[in-house]
Image (cartoon, rainbow, N blue to C red; front, side, top):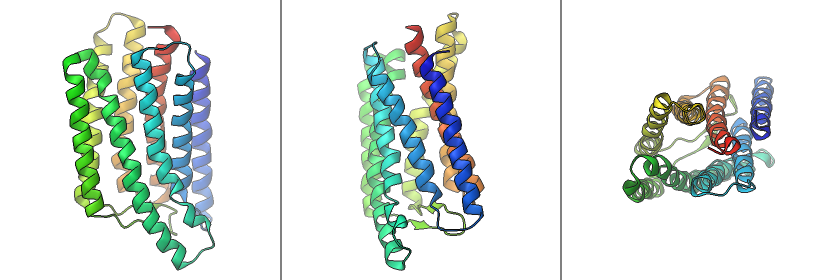
Length: 263
């Protein structure tokens, strides 16, 4: 197994342990924002993956596209994590109101990087399936993401911190929430199906394993998103974030497996 993949697995289990520890601390009471911890860990791992891909000796357009995707995804989740900083100030109503305002902007601006990440990612399966469509695919997701962002500004969310669970309730407008889910599902589910089918049909072990890792990672990450949105208890929030993190780690393993083998 490649050293990068071993390190990635270690990072996953370390992060899952820290998430579990945060959940246990919250069960014992106290002012502890689980969302900030979990999202910061996911942002750190995606940034680490981007750094490893950037420092790779292999340089090609596909690897560069994966690298850009992980950079943008890390910015997306990290911005929402850092928006929690008012919760680390002395507890007061004013600081919670400040958090609500900053978290709204953190959500709106952070998601711009998510839409950019999706527009970049779809170029990979489209380039392999039908190269003529990759620019059209990116343009579609840029337009859909732009529309979602405009509506998010017009219909702002009202985030709040739940002391009982430690979970940040984003309270996104239902229409905006559905459009966010639509962006992710349209980008990742068809891509996942393509990778899995491509892998299952391939007679080359390297291509089959890499494609199955990519497809499985995308599906797991896609499941984790809606699970996160419906989470109200700390334990469900923990499970949802671990599922998202697992999906990202499996996806990154597929990318690094490709790098390792030179396929």
